[in-house]
Image 1 (cartoon, rainbow, N blue to C red):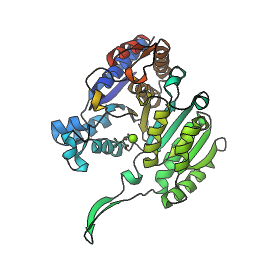
Image 2: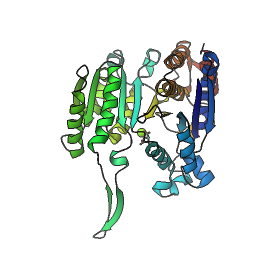
Image 3: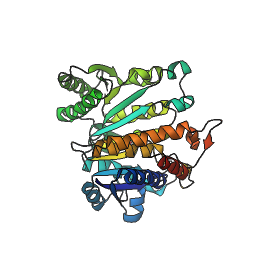
Image 4: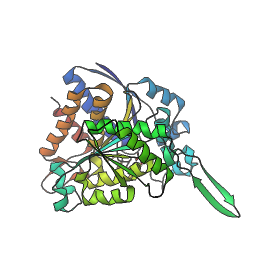
Length: 361
Ligand code: IPM
Ligand code: MG
């Protein structure tokens, strides 16, 4: 199969982790007889430095022309980087939001799995972590507060800022369908998370989710308020299978879910539209403090590449080979700094890439 992949190395540790993911993908191509064509584009700070804007139309076109996009991370340290002296719509993050919108990537899948080998890194009490967990956050990605009208005005001599949260039923329905579809392939449970005790958008969310649920009698649906969900994620994460939620809640809960796995350096994500096209990126940020030192953990990006093979190319066996390589590397005792524990072997980013590639057979 010929796979046309656009890569966005981005900022901070982005270029390092994407390099390792490509290394692993190239090994997959070799072992399974595929041809992979990579084209790089700039986004975020790298694009600001080169073109003065965080995302160019040309970059969008290149991404659109590919079968899938593999991304590292974007952004810098807001207290130090000159990128954050720019107006908000010219900063690195605007590039990421721009490409999500331009490619209509409304469904963001963020799995959070507790690996047996990393159970020691889980910050939860052992009596909670021993139950293990394997959940997936299905986050709406192109609506809500992120894309509502916003402005800052002066009213009666006071500065006033306004952000608006809107959802129409079409936006809710299409993400709910994605949530139920994926639950069907997992443990058949959807927890829809909202703030229906306060927000109108959440009350509509709940109604539409219930309408969609009627077509999935085999999937169990429960509703949960977002504040309670934040609590339940540390109290008993094993209760969750698919968490279905809107953009802002999903942003917050997915960081929480990743932290309870022990390392945000392990978690992949996929952002999908209505077709097979998707953008795949680690759930973590650009970690500018450790950039360029060859100490970053490339596993989240490598696992994002596995998601890409599965969702955009239907290459399930190849995706499993990557996931298996990750498990094997952990079993063999290799760790990057973020997941290091006593008695393990500490390796850098590029060595981790080599070890993973070696284990693709
Ligand atoms: C994420 C990030 C982004 C978001 C930022 C960088 C704009 O936190 O992908 O979760 O808030 O969506
Ligand atoms: Mg986030």
